[in-house]
Every structure is written in structure tokens, then in C-alpha cells.
Image (cartoon, rainbow, N blue to C red):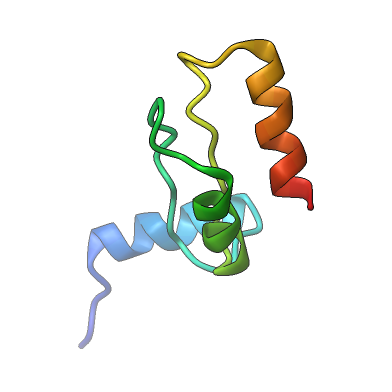
Length: 69
């Protein structure tokens, strides 16, 4: 009898709940989430992230525009 590891089951449940192709997540760390990294994660099937804690509103807008390109 083969049982799935509980961590794998949680990851699959998470991915299914959010409509993700892959159970991976980019942590939104301040200053460490450039648009290119988020785009790469999104292309791989996960959700992108913006570490906006230290960003001014104009910088957040510029980040979002870069991700949408």
C-alpha cells in the first residue's frame, strides 16, 4: 500500500485551491522580488509576489506594470 506524504498532499491541495499548475510559491520579501523573478514563477505555474513593504506607491505601480508586460 502506497501512501502520499502529508506535505505533498498539502501542496497539492494548496495548488488546486488557487488554480495553480505547480505547488510552488514565491515569498514576497521586501527588496528581493524583482518583476523578472515573479514572471518566471508565474510562467512555471505558481503565483508571483511583490515584496512591497519598503516600496513607495509609484514603485509598486512600476513593478505591476513591468509584470504585466
